Image 1: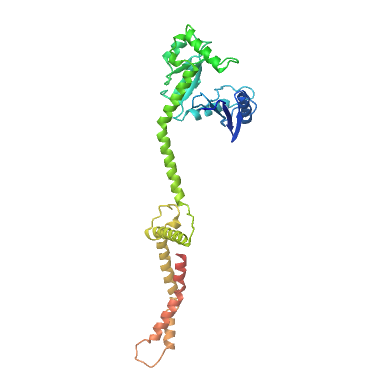
Image 2: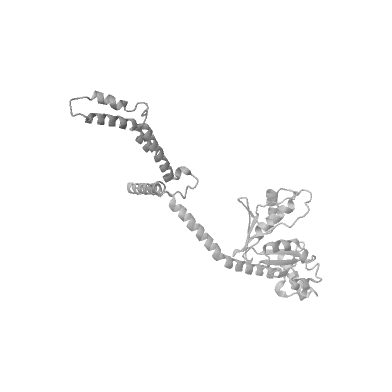
Length: 359
């Protein structure tokens, strides 16, 4: 429930759930809430984790946001799922865990506070009680010993207690507050309770103060998180391609791409930096290049020495026979050398080209 102080004389009420906005008024708000609840949780007695938000804009109400959580149900009744207890506990814990939440424990004056499961649950997330406030209801029905219970604080309620009398039957809000004030003023037992911790108006004022204190405490951290998120998004935005409106912009963007590509290639091909690809061996380029050079060397040697053992000097003798001429003895004609060299080069000429393509 979001309460907002509103200057207009006519109150404005609206329900929000599942992206729906349902206007209502004070006379029909109960029916609207029941209809929305049936839509969210079914017409049985199950619950739903989908929030139902009531926005109240009214003159004189405190600016306050409250979340009414389901009561703890240990034993499922007819129409409830068997795991109703776990569902309720999970929903409650989801909302009371955040450090910025103020836990409002509603206790009946009839019970022993130390045995209340809601107190135990709040203590699991707020061990010191620094953000737990207890509201004691039904004080008019069970006034005996109440003053001692709230003053003793055996269960470590850090923000203290507020005792209230709820509306009964068809009482208006104003009538209920008048009777509440009279009760705590005239009752022989309840009148002994400190006036600073009794009454719905005191509770509302205390909640507003606590919420304001909580907001002022956590606001700097929220602003920091927003700024960090904004910086992160702006950084991502800068990496997106910018709008290109002229050939100069296009050429500039193209040169940026070329520059980044060259930088990446330089890192992985020359410097052997593959920190971005630790598990992709194909990107460990310097190591792969050494392996390829070793294979290339073997290919060259095998290509130039093919059939060398079987035809040892046969080609050379054949060429010598074909180049016989008148000349100085024991001097090999230059043609023999050029012919054999050309043959050797021709036999391996495709190997370097294949190697370059592979690299």
